[in-house]
Image 1: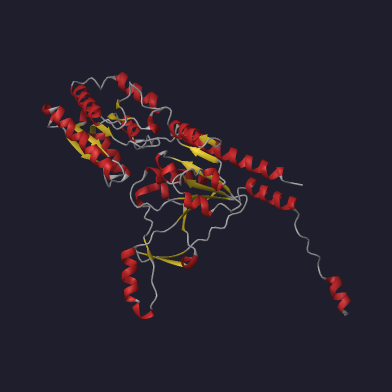
Image 2: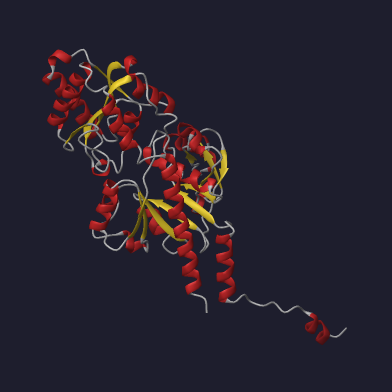
Length: 405
């Protein structure tokens, strides 16, 4: 057989055309073969923001999407130092990372694909402080993939700026948006225009500081199987509270409590109970047993605690952060101007006295709570969120079709 014959018999490999590549990407979206990545900070303590990200992941999974939660593992400085000292003969540093313990999330974490990111020298196996070793995940994104980034992580926005996927911000807090950015910097600088907002307040704020964003909005829900009405005759003269995420928030919360005791000396027997380090079930049980809930989150992007309390027939006295104003009405709580310690302490006393007189246990009060809660059901949350995702996927298909030759 001649060399000429061999050349003639070799198969001809055709390079896919641009339209072929685009059609293949569209087909992956239609067939639910593309991937939905969600970046999540590895929080090992209860975090409302992380809970929302995991809930979104579960909703996507239920809708048949391929969901992967990714996170950047945090270095355990102490464990790394101790391991490096033991390895002193080899003169190499050993990195030990903090394990991402999702047990506090309960069922929200069940069945989800959660992977640690690695790059550079940490691009292979990662050692964690619980003794486990995990293979790091290299983030390689395709044009038909979607990547969701929480509002406070511009470093992730920058790292993914050149990736061909569709990137979308999930905005749960107004407070961290500008605090995480450089002066005059916007999300548009990272090539991101699409945002999912969880409240009217965040949407209004974003429209004011970053005009031109394409914002879609849905409302979070309350788990009515967990947070359900309790027997009002068994409630204790206790006020439950969760002081917030910063030292300043803790100081202000305890200042409200001390001011209350100073204003209402005859109510010094009323007890305050901090909700801290509890499972979801224990958290709900403690709220249900209490007469009142003190809400002191000044920076909440939405804030579910007041709604959870209402669902259990526990009355609320609290501040009115930007994100909660959409449901905080005159007839469903004792609401003080955001950050006003004296006004909140005074209203808390008014609420307790009304409760002691039985004026808060009338059916009309509970009816107002239910009317408020009717806007935040699980069915509505699921429907609205999946409709947003379907809109994004349809828009992505339209974008692909627009670039076909």
